[in-house]
Length: 299
Image (cartoon, rainbow, N blue to C red):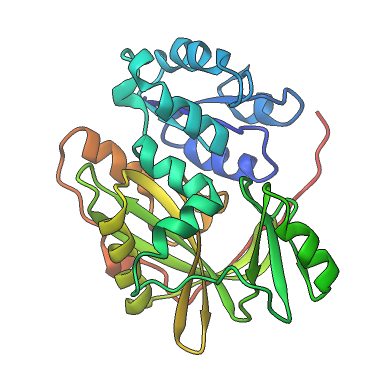
């Protein structure tokens, strides 16, 4: 049985994904937080240093030797590992990772804005004071410390803070797009999902088919070099697609795409073995609603 390693294994939504993965793989989970359900669901679990700690490099090399493929879910881990690949010769071929430049641009919202502003055919929320603005940490993940305001005093205050960015708030329909790129940075497949209810991660989503969104994912892939799973956040307003952010990793809600018959992990194993692969679009469960329910258990 193939072995895979996933980080952030104690995350709230991980039990469902781990349960699915264990049907096909031996799963080793790691997390800097020892408290959680990973010990119950994973075949093996190890407490890790945080992604900000240089000790993470030696740790991931030691644990990574045991597995066939490594998926990192934490932005700081992606950053430190891509920056120190030269120290990870023993596991380089096991890391499913975009290049450092790509990760660096995507993880810093200010660099992200400056990079994509150069392309006139990609719409971005503008850095300007609007009637309603959204304020985000320059470096952050999920919906943590993000808020919307119409208060000009608050907006002015955060515009002076180098740790935050202030953007116009785009009123529209929000989508997460799960993408998969091959070793040459070519888009293999993208699957958009309307975020109907979200609490940091999607709780209810609807998988859709949209050619314009797919074209945008191909365009984005031509501007930055990706490899493996990538999730893209967009908002559609009056037929205009706005690029909000890109996370060069599996999404926290990848289980929705998997249940829709798009499984990037299985495809990646075929790519790594140089086997033929093809996503059968006829099997994708378009226009289906997917629901996530969190449950409490005692251990």
